[in-house]
Length: 56
Picture 1 (tube, helix red, strand yellow):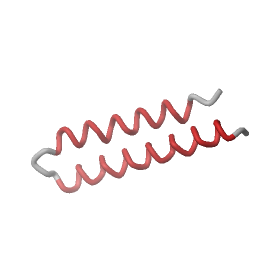
Picture 2 (picture 1 turned 90 degrees about the horizontal axis):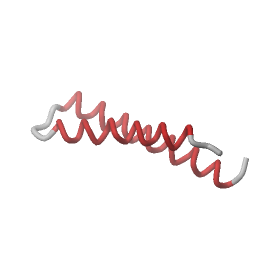
Picture 3 (picture 1 turned 180 degrees about the horizontal axis):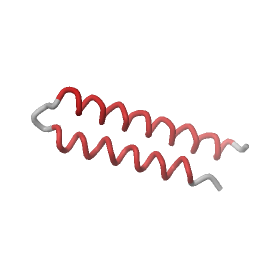
Picture 4 (picture 1 turned 180 degrees about the vertical axis):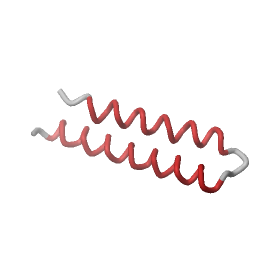
C-alpha cells in the first residue's frame, strides 16, 4: 500500500463520516435551511464513496 492509496482511503473515510454526521444532525435538528445542509451531507457521502473506491 503506497502513501497515495493510504491518503485516498483516509480522505474517503473522513468524507463519508462527515457526510453521515451532517445528514444525521440535519434529520434530528430540522433547522430552517436544512434542505441545503441535507443535500451537502449526501453529496459528501457520495464524494467520499467515490474517493474511497477509486484506489488505483
